[in-house]
Length: 292
Image 1 (cartoon, helix red, strand yellow):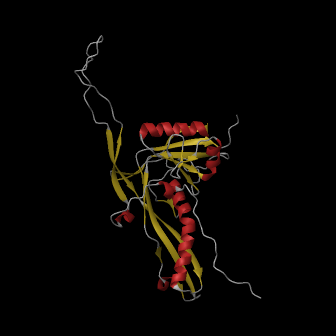
Image 2: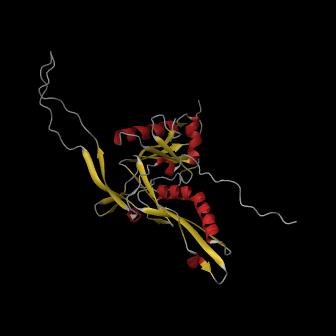
């Protein structure tokens, strides 16, 4: 007797604490973001001053305070989209069934593909995804900065030193809750050093309160794109990030039916765009558990 053909009964669950889980996802007011976006980035340093009439008993009056000067850097930043695609070929089936299969396939790969593109900047092997994490060169389009340069803060350090350097530099630069981007292979090391925990909202955070993005698609490469030595990885820190994504789109049967072989070429795709604020830092760290 032939075995029964069944629909796969398991439900696919994406890995938690990935990129899309951690970015802010505002609702776009149109679909034009799919052509890329531009915004004015404001990264303040701030300053202090005092009242020129201030007088302290026993010390007299201080000199007049220095003139107030601008301390908010402003520049145009931009981001470009990337589209994730899943495709399969099969015999002619109902349109609804084919779309269901294609959408399920896309759901299984889109987070991983998005994370790889956001780390490397590559889509279809071309450097077209901006901004991305592993970047050693600034890219501009006129007066718009599409790609910032990752600034290394430490290399070859243990994970506590590396994370501490990232968190301090992020605090100096951004002054708010940012993101620490790590490949998933680094997560056990952070856990062993007690440097990662799940907060009351279910988010993965550092001791300093920054959000950890543990990307299954993050390859751990350096700002120059090189693969780190075995037992080491690169981590990155950014300001808060935002993301847009489209609905899932499908090819139509009339466009995908190969009449010569009587097969369907069905695609499901979704477009994403990711941007982040102000800071772009990098740290190279050694993986492994504490030795003491």
